[in-house]
Image (cartoon, rainbow, N blue to C red):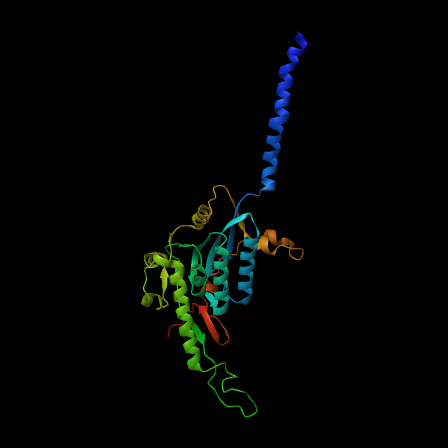
Length: 291
């Protein structure tokens, strides 16, 4: 027959065993889970500048970081840019398409998404803006080379070796790239695009309301709502929003990267006429002075 002392201790042993077998592993699991499986993240990239070789490389480096970090499940590109060089805009467009194969990407136009900047946005899953945003300028601008002339002291193996081609040839290249741009918009927007070819090729800047009516954007919402939309496309309910610039470029030579703060929008710079651009082809919005 069991003693009274054993009967008294038996429930305590059961409770102790329950704590040891169930509660302790559960507590350890709750503590360790966030460290073993990091919280999902939505990464933010800010396209707050003209597009050229350096800024394009910074942009692509951030997309590469997002692709290589398993915690990042979606990306939002916040755009304030007049566009820039044609080849760099195309590089960024293709890199967005590459990243889009692995995770949702949403574009949020804050103030300006013109020319090459809209080209980049066309590669995303969805584009959002504000009513007063400036969107469009779908087309090409080219700075023509000098008129061909003969230099007696310069020997070339072809008449256009020193010039890259004729001025008329540059014009034809611009028309070709204009068609490439328009086709990229048509493919990216798909059935959502309501504007016809003639409307798009006017290279006009539209406000957010008109851009939505033309199917160039998916709606007018705030940047925070666009971030939430990216999270929803990735199937996330609980996630962290992170700036990708400091995460991408923080290293021993740049220890202050974590102190990064999003730059202020410089409206005068975005609208300013470019200076000293070399001959070439650009997906860039240029507001010509009144004459």
